Amino acid sequence: TLVLKALKKDQDMPVLVFEWNEAGFNDVPTVPGLRNGIAGQNRVAIITKNGATSYSNIIFTFPNGNAIGAWVGQIRVNISWAINQPGIPNVCTSVTRINRITERDTGTPSTALDLENFSTVFNR
Image (cartoon, rainbow, N blue to C red; front, top):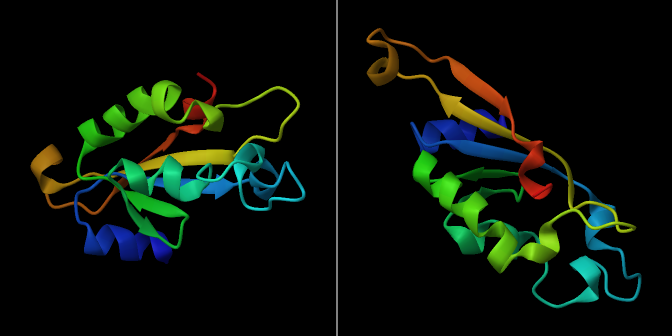
């Protein structure tokens, strides 16, 4: 229902749904909630500081597909700590991209959704 809420509020905007891995943000026991135990290396830095709207820190809407592309393109430069690291749990177990298929796309009224496994985004 959270996905539908996000899609209803931000119509026609692409969505990323994250299944976060808590262990990836708790790899330093004395500093929970931070990747590598470093301030600022958290979920907010990964997504919302990069132009997305958050729904419960699980679902994120972007203004358009280009915005997701720009976000992906800057991962290695700006948030390289989020990339999968040997010996440290990954920050998420899966990422799914959801696009609403609209009348503009098909020429007929539609409420269909296109789902794409986007989990490789942190494997770069």
